[in-house]
Length: 331
Image 1 (cartoon, rainbow, N blue to C red):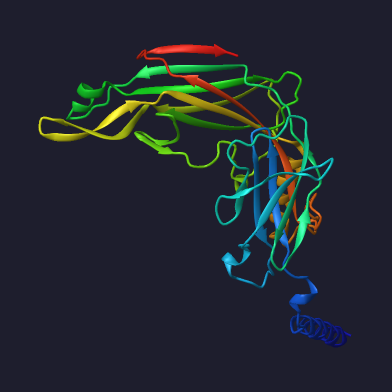
Image 2 (tube, helix red, strand yellow):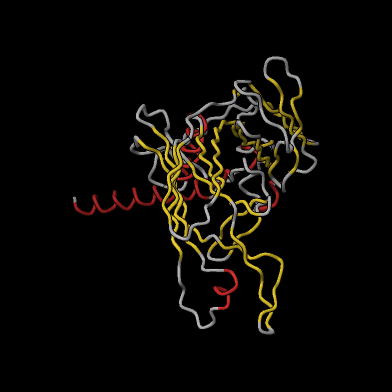
């Protein structure tokens, strides 16, 4: 009886091995799961401008990372009620297209996009209406003059001590209408906008002030706060292109930035749902123990990508001259 059981076990093992072998050697044809190149479009309408990212779908068997670039793209912003061209977007880089300077979408107006490129099927979006949202109610500046320990204090003699600035903004949200928030702080000097990259390092901002890098993604608040806030800590001295000779040494002329441009960005619930679905899909498809990933939502005509909505509130605050001060500005 024992010998019979052993032979039966061996037979079952051989049967399983044989069936696994048949599965392994089965050939998978890429055409079965990839229907060909399509336009992949993700963009948003905001109260300040329009941003659209255009790429091309590609087979999972294609390892060329630049294969997704699409040339000779046309992106049109259309009014939804009559399909009249509102504006044609300008190319910013290999992937991104933005509305031209001076164009502001009309408040409460519905818009959609049309994207086309040679040898690819054009795509259309459903409509989005320019959002309204809650405004920044107050901004607080905590300014403190700093004394760095350096051997050569020439810079202090010429230009004064650097100041640290802690800037915070606040939005009342007791009715829980703001479900997400992204902060951006830009800095004005000499009629140009700059980004703060670190101590003594301001780099001129060459992107439109309404441009948000969609690859960063946005998440909903886990616990919705009654007061939504954002903050930025920075030093206020910026190097100019001028120099000054002091004791035979050329020093770059240092100035103080003039103002802070504070932006609060809120994404529409459907756009947030798209981002969260993308994140969930990427996590599930890489987990061998998970259930099958669900299809990512889309409001584009080819079911690839999304046309979303963003509200941007912007406040501009001038910096005072005082070396040490805490001020709160109400709007």
